[in-house]
Image 1 (cartoon, rainbow, N blue to C red):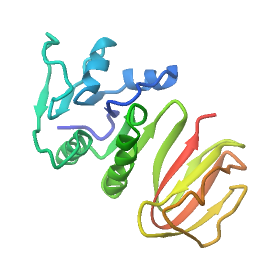
Image 2: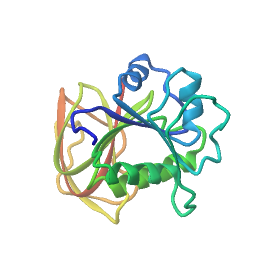
Image 3: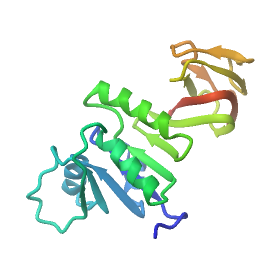
Length: 206
């Protein structure tokens, strides 16, 4: 049984964070899910994941530790999708995600599309050394700081977007899949978005 108040983290096989606060978040997780080759990095850092999920084409099988491995061969899904499916099946609906970017740009873009698909059933937030990435559905408020860079993306056909407390306010703006809403700026310690469909929101860490 997985408890709702536990901190669950998924670590992908991208660039492991260098920022100490992010590394601490991973170490302080109650339950760590590693996607395939990400387990190599975690074990090298003396951090044993609670479960390793994937087709195991990248994982070094001679680690020697007693590990909980779920081998899913299905090539129609990425290891990240398999991990998210496993979370849904196990009633884990709140996740922090690390090492999502770097190494392969196509994997990063693909992972954003995957997260967009799961935004209605999983409350997720992804962290890199440069950004905090999270979904926005309907009306949502975000903790922020004055001068924080805020970029909005829709991966659907379009989204009608309004904002509050951004330097360049949006008023029922028709946002298409494009770069038309990047590098806005927060004016306060919070901002609010309203959107007709899923958005992916990037907030700068500095």
